[in-house]
View: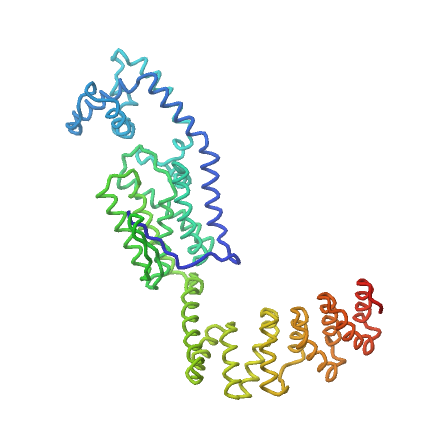
Length: 495
């Protein structure tokens, strides 16, 4: 057994695949809800069949019928069969569309036969019970296809194992196809692949009465869409042979489609299995065509999403190369690599950090100021941990001798971040400097208040009172001064 599973992407919580999850829920609800009574009905029907010994009437006639049509030369007489041989033959008879059609038309057990009346009565009861099952009503039988069952069969499953395996692969392929194609297109493509799978199976094998059920045709369609959306891009996929050998490789995605198609063709023509490989083949072909048309005639494929992991991997490789150069003091070789990373990933803080370090090591003050202004942007100050910011700020102070070129808003953002993160020394330095140079500017008194509040919160009461005296002396009538007094009272400290 060969199993091939791509694992190029992981689901993103910020953009969950709602429709993929909804389809899974529908399949689960159908199986555990609407199909829940089927097992009992099947047991009841086949108990009736066995108790009334219908097999003694139907199986001998099936053997005779097969021999007349050149299909039963290998079969022994019914009387010479043991119980195991009869049980093996029964599913063949039960699922033989030509024979069952004649049987139901009273052309096998005929009205003139002595056992006809009893057989017909019991057989009618048996058929009535079977017809009550959800599977019998909504599965696809290629001898009797309908528009309803072309769609409904893809939401039915034979057992829990069948359901779970299909739902795992529905999720693995579905979340990528849904986000990259768009939700509405994904849902339409999924249903269309399932429909095409059923039509393909019906066209190739039109006489079947065996119920065709399962999401696998549609899921194989998603698998083909997955590979076609990636196209020539190399993706990682895991494979196992007989669950003995395991490995993963990186190869162009479309090769996966060829591998799956070849595997299903092999299973169809060279193995004996009850798996509907024709439906899988139909789903693969349909999914490939759907994705090809969608890519060719629309501009809605989200390639940024598809290529995100590969871009990040290339970024990480380049960043490590730059760090290796920095470790060897090869700043001139590291710098263009880092600048390229920043052009392609403007949000990459590590690349910016290393450019800042290169400017610091090479004493390029103009570049140092330029990188510092980006390092300490208000967005970065909100996102980065206070401890890292404090280290970088200390490096910036040391390299410039205090000649910082940051805006008032940046300085206030840094002060508040340091205060909330427990980095009180740089916070106090910034606040003290702002009190001297911009004491009347909006936000300065608030920064002083944030510092005192966080000192109190962390139990540094004396330190807070020392800083708070400045607040009470310079801004005695401010709301911040009133807040500081209330905070002191709450912890039992004199004002």
